[in-house]
View 1: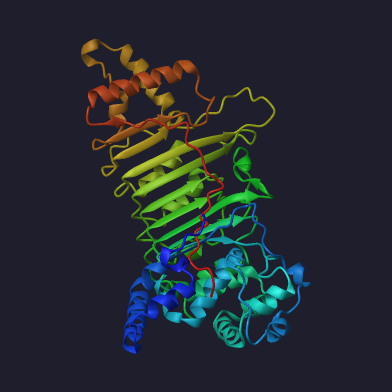
View 2 (view 1 turned 60 degrees about the vertical axis):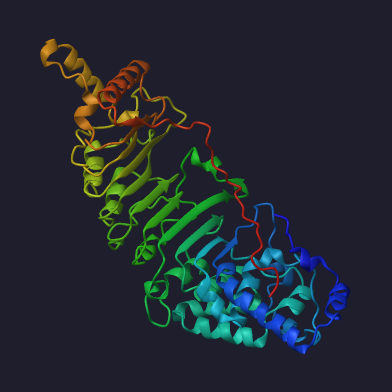
Length: 483
């Protein structure tokens, strides 16, 4: 996004000199200065309320090899006394570094920041392209000493990597130090791009103890966490969605630490495939109300482990994935048991089923096992969007059984017998596309139309087939251009 300046900043300094020469006295200049300071104090909380740094995938970042992986402190000691002001925007790709310098020089600003959206960089990403940048823009000795004192409060096993990263100008360590300053955070959005969460300073800053106290003491107000992935190996990660590879960035790893945040209300995970990792590791997240689990390898057993730790969940958006080659099937009994853990609070449920098919033809069509049965116990449920395969077999069986009964005893609304009474929105989707034959699909759709006619208060959810992910979503607005 192009930078725009207020009109008064475009006036040449000579013109201001002319204006101030007409009757301005020392008292007038003092009034202007006081007014400027007052305005700055008023707008500062809003100016620093959020920080965004997710560079476009095409934007290259400096690498440590540019400076031969050496300590940059000797370079900064040779900085010219009069300094050299770099052109505006020259250093814009290092917003985290500039923002950290601003917070170190004025620590009160750190308390204003409530929301962050950042990229977790690779471990070989640096701060400077060459020794000139390192000399002119490096940390002062006072800044380095402040950062070193912060690192000393981290667990001892992290000291070596963080100190080495600080002295060599590693971008991931700078981001970690930045997050350690922001104790007033309420929302954290981290984008992964080839980087792993394991051993990453960005996640260590959020999950490690600090000064001997757990992470939730340092971040008492975090309410929302979002972990997303946009690219792997330079290619859009959506290319990998079709095969649902295992967790390519270990997005599952920091989840137990995230559950420690006492006020956590919203959690969104992309490409998260935990396997058995979460078992016996998730503490109870009593305030967690909204969860999104998409594009990972999640089944009903993993979901049950997760929901057991979220007793007050209100909204769930989950994609369940199965491998047809491995004969994986969804067990409706287990899924119903998992959902029943939150039946007293769940108000919105969106489920998807994705089946990964191999190259070899399987003569046995993919289908669910057992029946979901009635959801009448979900008394708070108002929004339900589920795959057609979840109920296809039992709805068709109920419809066929009804057609063979005398008309006066015939039950003509099989969906109504199973859906919650307070439902307001209802939709079915083609989860596991290709697994439901056309005749069964048509019968299920007919029964849905009957259900909607019999329950005029229920509105149908229409699927938006044209919606797509914007994997290149980028916010390039400059919050801070220079320290």
